[in-house]
Length: 291
Image (cartoon, rainbow, N blue to C red; front, side, top):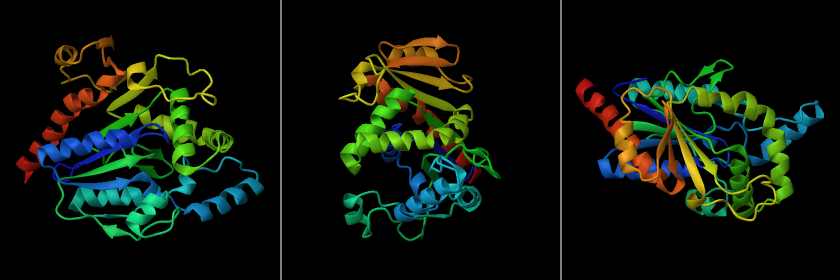
């Protein structure tokens, strides 16, 4: 953790909705005049798309059918930790972009499934914002938790997470439902061992729960809408959280436990604005006092 160079880390599985949460943070940053350096978790994958396919095939031939981006072997986690450490000390570091599709290829000038070159963060910045799979990972010689000042988990119930992933991968990446199912099955051991434990380390978890039937996610024709959902917001420590204020500001909300508030799904952006803005401003006030 760093007073002068704070780090915010948003972690969640593929299809969880971390990109939507990032957009809310970006709105807050713009409104409050905060300059952020950004890291996309995919930038720290170890292999590009073709190399990853080769590594998966080699792992399967060696008796490991579960090699996946969720596990440490397929990622540059030590390098990611080094960037967190560097930013916390100096406010500097570097990242790159993973080019997912033709639209991003037009922006970054590379081929889909490849990486751009490493580039230094713009300077100066007020904070570092990470969004990806491993923002609160501990283990395998890595501990990102000790560097992040605010850790957010985005954790839909698993059937909803799968529905979101299936629809995204079919629409944006041209995958079949069967191909996405194979990916889900292959990643499951790493999901259990490396993704789920992070949500015990996060300061706040946002978990969307559908109020419609999602019992078979592989035949769901639509993603449940925010109006068809509730969101459980869990605080690791409720100290300093003004729950009466949140309850008064968010219609339809209620407390489910001493550290958890439940809100209508269509109030998520409002809730995030109310909860996260004071936390971000507090980080900035600490920064200004220290500098």
